[in-house]
Length: 67
Image (cartoon, rainbow, N blue to C red; front, side, top):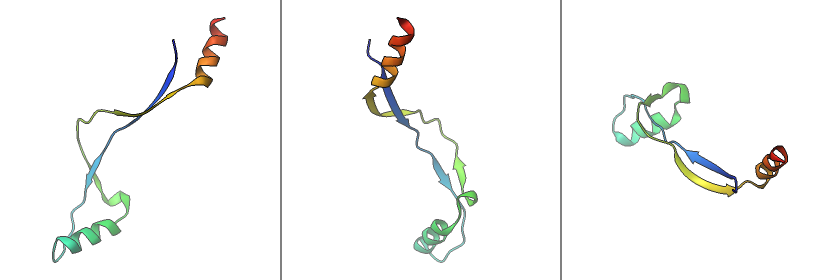
C-alpha cells in the first residue's frame, strides 16, 4: 500500500485591545504591535488537510524494514 505525506493547517485567531480614534487607526495600531501583545482566541478548530504527496522516501524505507 502506498505511503502518503499529508500536510495540514489549523487556523488560529488572535485579538488585542487598543485605544484609537476610529477603526482604521485601531487596525494600524494593532498591526504595529508585536506578537506577544496579542492573545489567542480559544477555538475548537480541527486540523484540515491541505496537501497530499506520495512519499517515495518513506515507502522505500518501510520496504527495507519489511523485507
